[in-house]
Figure 1: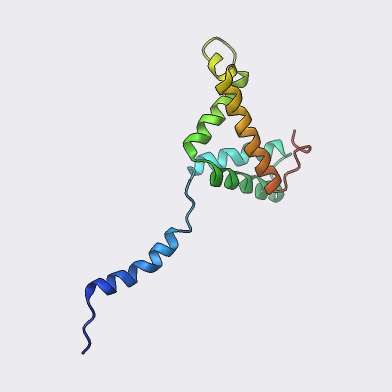
Figure 2: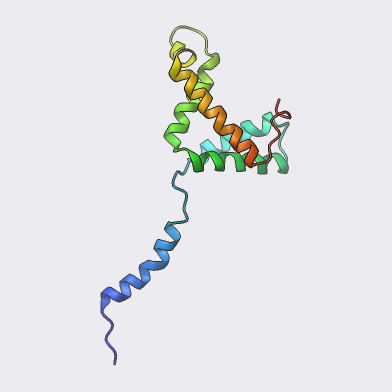
Amino acid sequence: MKYTPPLLVAGSLCLPVSAFAAKTPAHDYPTQARVEYVYDCMNRLGGENYDTLYKCSCSIDYIADQLPYDDYVTLDTYQRGQNAAGERPEVLREGSIARDSRSQLAKLKSEADDQCLIDSDAQQ
C-alpha cells in the first residue's frame, strides 16, 4: 500500500478552489444597488425590454469592475446631490471635490456606454 502524506492531498484539493477564487470579481456590488442602477438605466433608455436590460446590466458590471462599491456610492451621492436644494447639500453641489466626483462618474458611465453599445443620444 502506498502512503500519501495528508499535506499533498490537502494541497491538491485546494487547487481547484483557488482557481475558482481568482475568477470572482474584485469589487462586488450588493444586488439591490445593481438592480436600482439597471431600473434607472432602463427608464432612461426608454423602458423595460430585453435590449435595455442587457445593456444596463452590462453597464453596471463594467462600472463594478472599474470601481469599488464604496467609491461608487460616494461618486453617485455627489451626482444625485447636484440638484438638491437648500444650504446643507451645498457641499454636494459646489466645490472641486463635487465637480471632480461628478466628472469621474460621468467619464466612467461614458466608458460603460461605449463598452455596452448604449447610444447616449437615445437616453431621455
